[in-house]
Amino acid sequence: MSENTLVRVERICAELATTGQPITFTAVAEQAQIGRATLYRDKQLRAVVDEHRTRQTDARTLTGLATEVAHFAPWSRRSPPPSPNTKNNCAASAAIHRPDDEPL
Image (cartoon, rainbow, N blue to C red; front, side, top):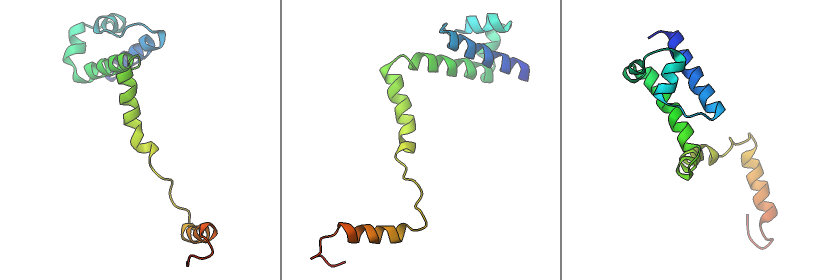
């Protein structure tokens, strides 16, 4: 398989997805002018088609949306890095929010 074939298959899958057409091995093989067996046998080509098919299917289901949210959830929970003055800011904030009768 050449790099050109891989790029062509990727482009065709993206075009099918953009136009809302189903991404099938038959459709991709016809447009790429390669045999369907080539798509199935070559691991890289098959992975490209499978990935696009999964995206297309998952985008329309609640399970697909839940999977996508779960994929991004760990990044959304990360705290921003502390600023250089974090220690000073925390002490000042604690002093402001603490009642007068509580010791620091």
